[in-house]
Image (cartoon, rainbow, N blue to C red; front, side):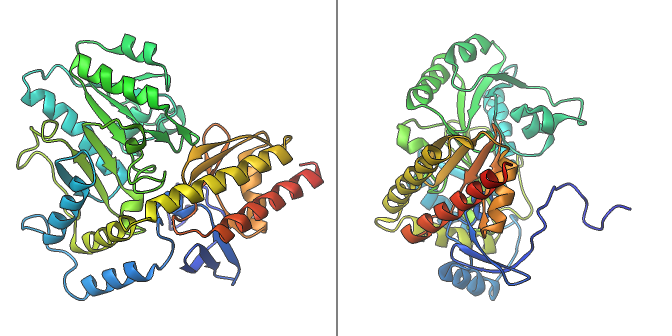
Amino acid sequence: MISAVMPTYARADLAFERGEGCWLESVDGRRYLDFGSGVAVNALGHTHPRLVAALTAQAQKLWHCSNLYRVPGQERVAARLVEASFADTAFFCNSGAEAMECAIKMVRKYHDASGTPERYRCITVEGAFHGRTLATIAAGGQEKHLKGFDPVVDGFDQVPFGNMNALRAAITGQTAAIIVEPVQGEGGIRPAETDYLKKLRLAADEFGLLLVFDEVQCGMGRTGSLFAYQQAGVAPDIMALAKGLGGGFPIGACLASERAAQGMTAGTHGSTFGGNPLAMAVAETVLDVMLEPGFLQEVARKGALLHDRLCLLVERHPSSLLSARGLGLMQGLVCKRPNGDIAEACYAQGLLTVLAGDNVLRILPPLIVTDEEILEGSAKLEAAIAALESRGA
């Protein structure tokens, strides 16, 4: 018999009832150091007092009024995002997949408004993950996500990640845009080389394409800058955000230059819940915290400390680990033994991690993690690996 909750997830047998900072407490009273952050969502940890205060205050005033009317919170958050990025405008939605759907629609609408409606195809890269809608699984191109959902939505041509020769060869008169994650998350914590991102920008300009960055996971301070693209000095035309933007509250945003958004006029896109007052109150507070002097520099410093500790684990456990890679507090361990085995062994040590492609274990602590918690998490991870090795597992 099917369960009341549709069985679309392979869930761990864990349930949590409260959290504080970088720690979660399960229903049976066990404490876990959260180095998964709800897949990079709880950027400021659990029950951050400023987020709780912002949400509580807004909840006592107004939850929802719809986008039939002005939403002052949207206007404030959009202005903050525009000021802090390449963008001139922002659309608010509820998730990363919705933000990417908006990006894809905007690409097509741009070329339609420019008089070239035949240009609708997007070049994407292998290992990408852009969401679970029909269009975004087609953009991601991964067989495990596409299986059973034929016919695949048309309009996406995939090339190897980091391969400019293949990308340039894939450009045709129907190509409209290039879509890439500056750091692949689900694909295995693979940062794009700066030179690659620069060449993507040059190719987009040369062929009249839009450059779209998916920063749903790597954005909002995760890599040590507010947005990952800023470290390469390469600005996109469109960018999708979600996850950390709400610090745990569902929100997505699609940012764009004025040129890219020229076709997005009244009636072309919308959302009932997108940009509701509750989400805006939390997002505004997240930005308040992240943009405080020194916050992002601390993320970068702590990211370097975490990376060093992971590299040390690779040296100590060469039979289990191959390498460490990542940016800021978006780190991954490339495993030799099944990454799921290591993640499960971490549960016994009171540590939460996240699986990724390429047999990678994602390490995504909240951005407020302390040096002591990084050292404690590294010790728990090593204990888990040592336990597996001692059993000959």
